[in-house]
Length: 271
Image (cartoon, rainbow, N blue to C red; front, side, top):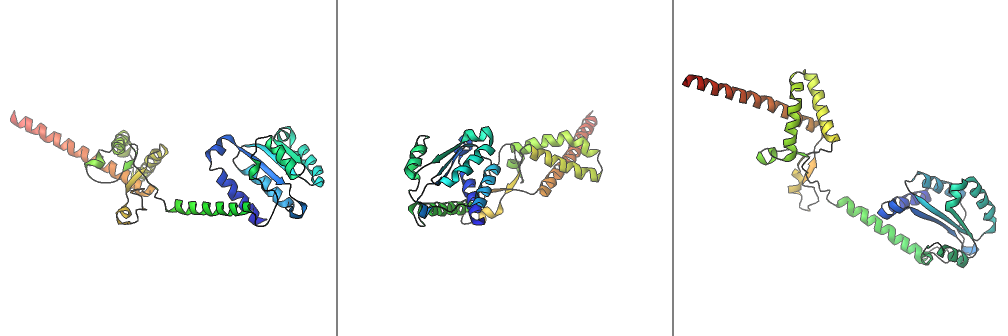
């Protein structure tokens, strides 16, 4: 049963990756109208687990069709209908009859019955198709793990580096405004308070969607070109960037103040 539960969970998870499924919901179908010699064994525990999956999954269940040809199942279906309430009964459709009769009933609801099996066999074409689908999913996941996670700096991001191109980057210019606005708080804070200030600034920026990015040194060494050109830095390094920005502003302000004083002294000397 554990293996069946894992399969159900995996199939449902892949199903919800489809955008159409997310918007429109799903129509569930339980089909057991095969010849009795090939009938799938009834597993009550598996049915309970599947029900819990359906309740836990973030899906919109539009309808549930239950097809069966075993008359002994009818009393159980009657009990289920009473237990699920009015809203549940509106979405539950039961169909009793032969394989052909149930397929006709499903056709009336627009369900493509041509994809259903006519009989349950251990190695049917449908099972081969399912195995092929699983192989394709495994291949897709492997390719996705090898794909380059491209990180492209936006105008809101802060990029690490020296030189005018980095200084004039839109995100770095916006950071200067943040530093200016909180510089007085920085000046009047003790060392411990400054560390807390750096942390708050980083958290506020990240909460607003700002990323701290740097050129990935591994990108130039990677001949397979699987390494991203940019990568995010750690929060600790981001705090270091903020600390450096505050210190730089203090040094620049002092330099500009001294420069203005020198100009004033020069003007006084000329007079």
